[in-house]
Each structure stands twice: as C-alpha cells, then as structure tokens.
Length: 217
Image 1: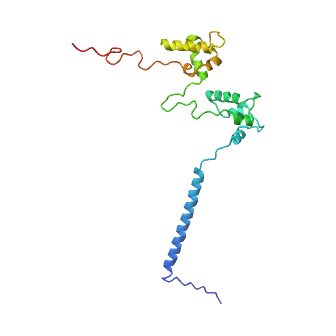
Image 2 (image 1 turned 90 degrees about the vertical axis):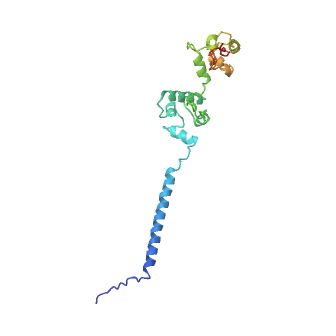
Image 3 (image 1 turned 90 degrees about the horizontal axis):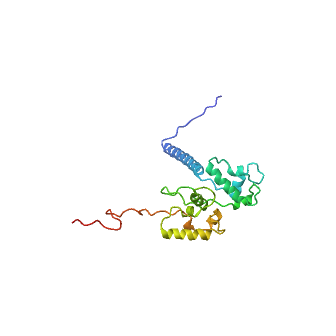
C-alpha cells in the first residue's frame, strides 16, 4: 500500500498574510546588510590612534637594542636639507655624546614647531634663526663679522650710530670682529639686516620731493 501525500493549497485568506511575512523578512535582511556595511565603512574611515613616544622609538629601533643610532633616527629620509636637520636634532638630543639616543634622550629632544621651515601663508618664508642671520651678514664667509658686515646696507646716520654701539657692546674680546657667540648676545633688532623703506628715495606724487606741483601761471 503506497503513501499518498496530500497538499492543500492556501486559501485566499492566507495569501495576504504570507506576502506580508515575506516582505517583512526581505526588509529585515536589507536593513541588517546595510547596517553591517555602514559599520564596516566607519571602521575603515576611522583615524588611526596616535602613536606614543615609546611606540615611535620602538619603530625606529630596528635592531631592538634599546638605543637609536643616527641611521635609525634618520629612517627613510633622503632629502639633503631633511637629513641635515635630523643630524642636528640627533646631536642636540644626544646629551651624553655616545653616538646613540636612549629612550629618555629621545623623549627629551626638542620638538620642531608646527610649520617650521615652511613658507607662511602668502608665500613669505619664516624669519631666519640666529645662525642664518649670522651667515647672511658674513659676506666673506670667514666665520666672523666685521663692523662693515654688521652694518650691512644701513645708510642713515642714526641707524649707523646705533649699530656701531651695538657692535662695540657685543665685541666682548675687543678684537674688532663678532664671533657667532658674540653675535647671539646682540639685541634682536640688530641681528636682521636693515631694510630700506618702500617709498624711501622716491619723489612724492607730483614729481617733486616733499612739495606740490607748481601752480600754472
């Protein structure tokens, strides 16, 4: 005797209910999928956490000996000016002069100011530091400044007098020249090269200096 399976089709009253249930299931699956996609996008776009000083030190310490050599400190830098800055920073941080940086020395190293060495907005370069100011004045590159080099392009009598007084005050050994250390002791106003005023030496409007156009007769 064979087994007979009977199938009873749903009546008209049950079909709308099935449609509702199918729509709800479809909407739920779409909503869950969208939520997972959004969550994954947020995780991808989220900024990476900032490294600690210890983590940065560990990343640079490629041989894991607990110290940084100059080459490890430089990392992947290749540009000449960048390498020069890194060498100066390394020497300044190497307080015991052993040729390596410990973690404490790495932590205590002076940090570069934001935007240092980059042109300011408007295309102007940042102000020169003392070493650059000295080098700019030292036209014969002999490592010291004569009075003429210190004066630069100054021409006004009052300005020249002030520069001479500042030069004599800074020339502590009285040899007639300023060394880099003596130059550092000068007031800041005398370190930068004097600049001529924009309109200095130009006739005023009207063609005559300090006067108006002659009246027509």
